[in-house]
Length: 392
Image 1 (tube, helix red, strand yellow):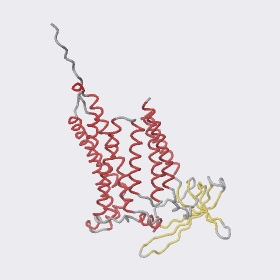
Image 2 (tube, helix red, strand yellow; image 1 turned 60 degrees about the vertical axis):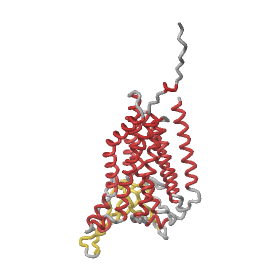
Image 3 (cartoon, rainbow, N blue to C red; image 1 turned 90 degrees about the vertical axis):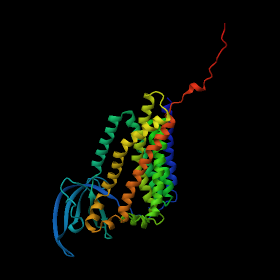
């Protein structure tokens, strides 16, 4: 009963955080008011009408072409749903040579451009991939429910709050020019406490997990702040940062690095923390009269086993996410020294190392907190033993 009450209370508090947080984050946030939003219409290609290939000369490049494909498509959304329209796809080999040419049956997104004379023209913008992603997501959710059952439902609820806290609160706060450092810490704390309490309930294990995780995140954050200054980082790691700065000059790009490192490492740090807290909880309940030192030692031993694979997981995740950039820079640079001093590469390395240090710090922190909570206390010494008079 107590566990259900705690779950309901945390559930309600999480909803309140999302609602109030969104209101605060979007207050006086007019950054997107002047942005023109393009409306795209879903359609399905019915037949190809014409394919025209025109050779073009681009510098010293040879065999370059502009290909214009005219096709007929049936609209599957919008006010003109079911109408047949004539669309155009343009492919330039020197810009986007790998784009697939449309074929009958392809599901695509079209943009309707209306000229001053009122003439309507439809242009291919992108393939519609939403349906496939939705089905893959459904499979993912079904597997969580299948294997997790009740805990699977709790996991989905916590995952929902995590996603909402990022997209409904955190991102609007950043775009509104608010303090990114403060919002990052608040978001990490909310995700940590809401996740562990909703999924695992309120217990000593939850406290050890939450505070161990927060401790590791704070260490990672402090190191990031120090290295931001030491490495003379500007935050201009790629063209996206430049566009973001142009969109809103109030956004601190160095703070974006800080936020990216902490949120990127949070999942791995939380995973390590719950592994240790849960393992020590089992050890302390199954074994008899384990003291602080015994539990602490067990936690460090468990942490050593987790350390290798979890650090590899984090580093490989960062390498995988930026593999194209690394390959491009490696192929175009003749100096390894120059490559490893580029800010975009340095930031990737910083993310991996700082995140790993956060994991390593979480191990002793969680072990320390868990040992303090789980240790055996000999209460017999506090009990007064009555010694009566011997009767003859």
